Image 1 (cartoon, one colour):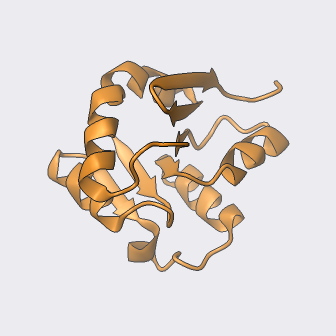
Image 2 (tube, rainbow, N blue to C red; image 1 turned 60 degrees about the vertical axis):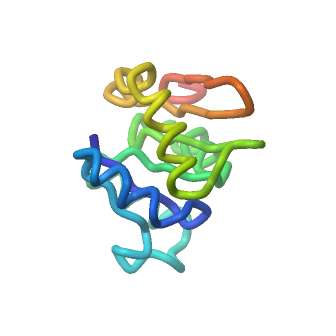
Image 3 (cartoon, rainbow, N blue to C red; image 1 turned 180 degrees about the vertical axis):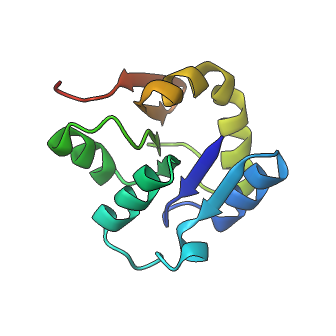
Length: 123
């Protein structure tokens, strides 16, 4: 699976996902550390990457554009953001949510639960 990890998450998460065999990069590796959300969103869509973030603005972008790409995974309240802990959580939920990512989805990982919403939002 291909991932683009956003700034709110530890860059180590991308390295750990890559070690698991995924094509994972952090925005800083692509020169997008200070890029606008629109640019990060567009890059993830163009490269068919799941955008991994803790920034709810990406859900808003999906709703406004009624896009089916990129799929977005959001770490929310009480979820770990450090590399190893975030990777462990993602590894645990990935088998369940991977099919949704393939067809376009926003996945929200919250304290103790995972919610999946198919894209487009409002469509």
